[in-house]
Length: 178
Picture 1 (cartoon, rainbow, N blue to C red):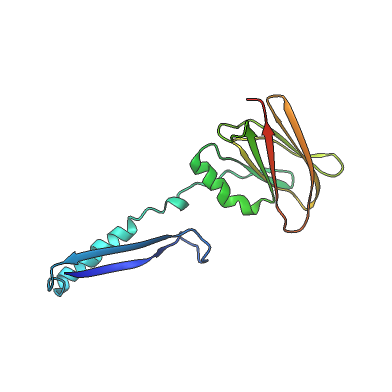
Picture 2: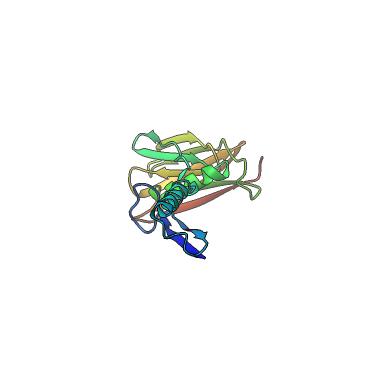
């Protein structure tokens, strides 16, 4: 038997760094000894392999990014109600230094409608929004001291934190109500 194999890594279109999600592959085509020497036969094999490469699913990159909302000088995204949305949220997370996670009785599934208020050091509301899922990421205008309030089914929780430098604030709000 003779085999013709193609191996490699498929990366998302437009990504040039090694940290981008990728799919490794190995495709082989085997024929009895001597049958791969014909030039026409080799071209057919190459076409088949090329077609298979084009058909590889790039499932990690087919996820549509969450909609970016803007209020004043802050931007935010929210979502994560299903697995595809969660992947999309996790993919954009590095762009948002304040990351809120909402849980009800220890679960994130089905948590939507949390009212979020971001207040600056003076107590002024600089962002007010309602979550579209259990994950809510905020990119505030600058670093500083912020109070983040979350309200779900009448239950209110508040945290005051300092956002300094390249640090991320990952805050979990655990609600008892459903």
